[in-house]
Length: 123
Image 1 (cartoon, rainbow, N blue to C red):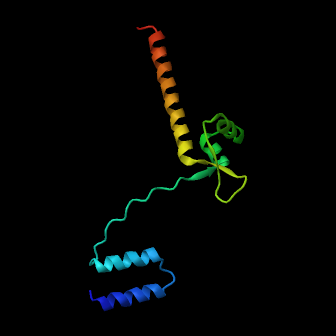
Image 2: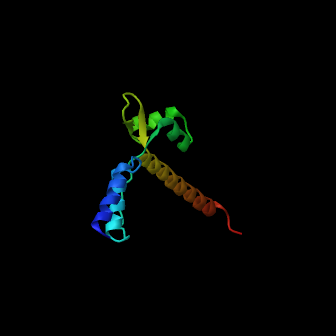
Image 3: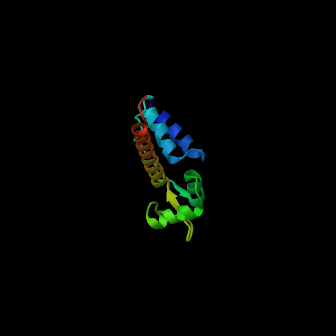
């Protein structure tokens, strides 16, 4: 593509306020490379903070238990951005706690089942 054409497109994209700088750069790079686009580097997911109420809902417990888990160190409270008092919990920490509870629960069920089959008389 001719450089004049690219300059015209670049000027038109700058004039459009709805196009962000990163989108503009991506469109121009696509045009310069003849339509082939390099894959974007994978973005790291930002850690998601959830409120105590949502954590309690996911755990199926009360707000008091969520506070007790935070006090005991099973969950870590973090300040919500731009807030002085409000606290949230990292979703990844909550999911790890849920997974840990699920695995310990399944271990308990396996132990109970094996004990029941060993204790029951054979026919």
